[in-house]
Length: 508
Image (cartoon, rainbow, N blue to C red; front, side):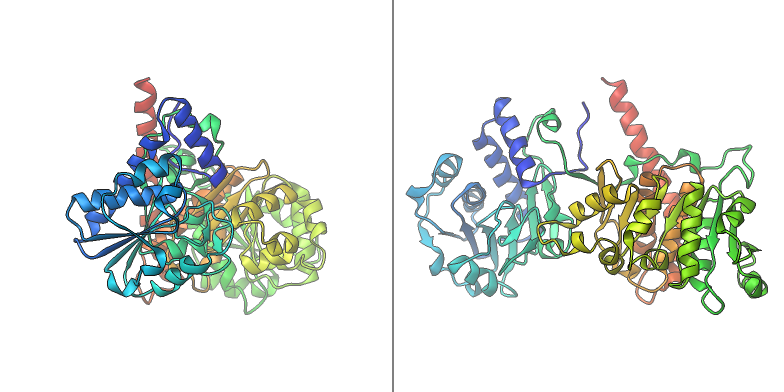
């Protein structure tokens, strides 16, 4: 069995992995010992010795703190330990870890954050589901801006599964977590509270995957096939995929042109921009690299798709929220062609989402941002018990197709329940037009034969890579300029991951 380094675990699933390790002969004290060493290694690689407060809670997260304090003390760091409970009240592995500390133990109320250059927050881990109270809440508030904060597992106050805090929470400069990432390390707003995130291997034996089924995966190039997107020696434009993009009305064709251009750059061999007769001349002049074709707006839209022989189509960017667009979407869905429904193609169904859900099929990718998601899935969006992964998972099941919920923490889900989280991105992408580029990328990959789930996942990563190659002052045109390098880099990483897998399998 191969290791699932991309697996995302809930707090319950992490507990199952821990129990599996213990059942396999690796006691909890050794897991805690490894966690403490991982914390110390991460701290000492980044920071010089300085007055340090270690805040210890009542459970195993506090045990990680006791382990850290003892190790830093052995390295001659000036350490003071502050505990939420009396040391004699500790039990199990946490009590064993606390016994390693030879200095005095002070109550939390004795801690003044301004006296320390570094604070180790080991009060509560990812399993905390209630707001911080009392001294813990005070320290979370008063530590901000005063000291470097290093949190064990997640910053105390944050719910590791729901990825948010109900009250005060620590804002870490560095979060050191163990074995696998949890939702709070990937989803906003919790991710922003974590600072730099370091994942430490604490020695849980392989085989844990059967005991703790992951709730999702971190998106990366090793997860999806890209071989068919590389042209071979006998390739021609029609063999590389045909993509159709619906243009917007007169004066609003820019979004669709961005999608079409991104689709062409992402390898679709023949991209057609479908436009009404009155716009044909202007659109043709604006994008000479893209074939433009007029269609009869009074005829069923599926006729236009059939004429282009499109293997995939993008509908919605700049199209306008009109009855015509709704009819066009439903007509295209009736054909069964692979579709990307973006922007206006989603918003147009706000009054009656069920009309869309009834027509959707597994070959479709929906690409809502937060507002569009709320228009289609208002109950899921408003449910405080659901994090973004669960919202997207349930949305994909309801829609019967792949849903890509955009954001700094883009989540992709398919109807069978699989979920990927893409955090390979850049704030530079928060500018007009980049969503249209993403829609075109997905459409291109669909036209080249990727499944909707893989096409959406790969496009999100490539889009993010292009954004990471942009600097201040960049626009959507800069993102397009960076796409070739982003694609090349993605292919390199994909082939490297595939080679590593072959080596592993060959080695048994």
